[in-house]
Amino acid sequence: MYITALASFIAAIVVGLILIPILKAFKLGQPIKEIGPVWHSSKAGTPTMGGWIFILATVAAVFIWRWFFAEVVSPRQLTVIAAMFIFALVFGIIGFIDDLAKIRKKHNDGLSSKAKLLLQLIAALVFLFLMRRFGFLTSVLYVPFFNVEFTLPVPVYFAFAAFVIVGAVNAVNLTDGVDGVLAGVTIPVLVCFALLGLYLTMTEQYIFSLALAGGLAGYLLFNFHPAKVFMGDTGSLFLGGAICALAFSFNLPLLLVPLGLIYIWTTISDILQISVFKYRRKRKGLSYAQSHRLFKMAPFHHHLEKSGWSEYRIFTVYTIISVICSAAAYVSVVYSLR
Image (tube, rainbow, N blue to C red; front, side, top):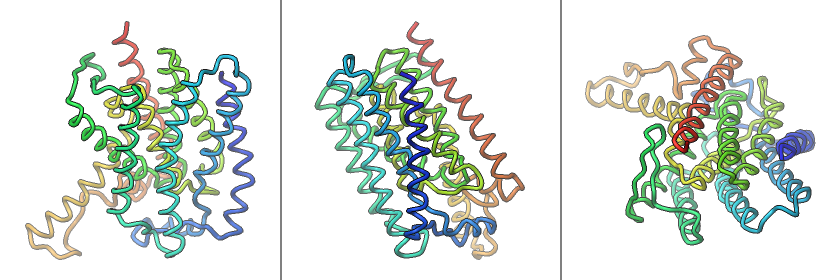
């Protein structure tokens, strides 16, 4: 079934070669934040919404898998794959709307934070309700590494799960700030899910993970520095939704902690930056200019850039960390089942 990943990889290359010129022709370029690194200004106008490359490649790969393995594909497997894909696509569409708003305004601010949060929360709750309704989700919470599980009251579990989904999706989105980094960090995460699907004989998760990993690898050929296209919120929110869909389909939402260490640290660095800045201004009465920040710039990958790290180096280090975290997450689950 590795043909799924290969098919998705090839499909992504084909889609990219077709889509990128179209995005350029319609001048669907990425606005760059004025407060961002000065050298990022050269990236202004680079085609965005490239997330459609791996989204469409994933669909193509699943259809190819269905075609070649028709005799062993069950309706349940197709239902689960469709559910995960649709859930991720809903987030991708939210990102697509946000990307269009940015292009229309010619500014890096699209939908309001409140609007995005509300749409994401609704999507999360609908997904959780349907997963629970059709028996694909329990309220049992497994703790990785400690081999412990406990059952939460359903309302509490839903509140916790919705918080995890919205937080994780936005953490993934925030990580997309340097050429190739989000793709490089996410591919090991998807490989981990694929290996778990293979080990647990959960074919639907295995196929979906492989298809998306292959498509993301194909997309990376266009997004590696210097990027010829950006995935935009279309792609980053889709990836966040896909990762959450996989984690909950395994009934392993807490696995997102070791798996998503880079995503989590990226978010924490941003929160710390804002918190320290506000504290120094309000509590110490400092002016805007006097209110020194914790990092040279947040999220942390921009701090590294301002500290002299190249985008190649950030990509390499972040990807290696993600590989290590993904391996540890996989071992934590497999070891506990022996």
